[in-house]
Length: 102
Image (cartoon, one colour):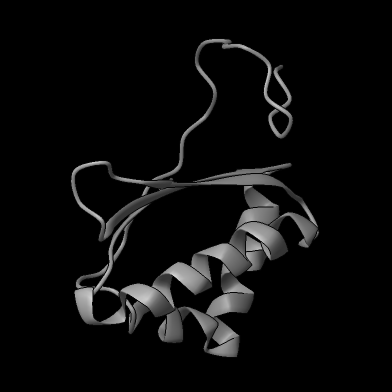
């Protein structure tokens, strides 16, 4: 999960970036899906929930983002560094088209 706060002067650019991300990320090898959530009380706060086949696939993708400069470009749209956390599924929940339950 990635929690981000966008810069208000880059709101439109960040929105377009997140639309592209939601379309393109599931095509990356090992990515099973992504949810892009916007805070109801703050238009500049988002959470991205990505699911991956394994942590290794995710790390490979993140390494590629850093080497290509894409991560640095993304960060310029943000008010502060993103908060990145890794979770595992603890409890089952209603089926989702992009999450496979154990």
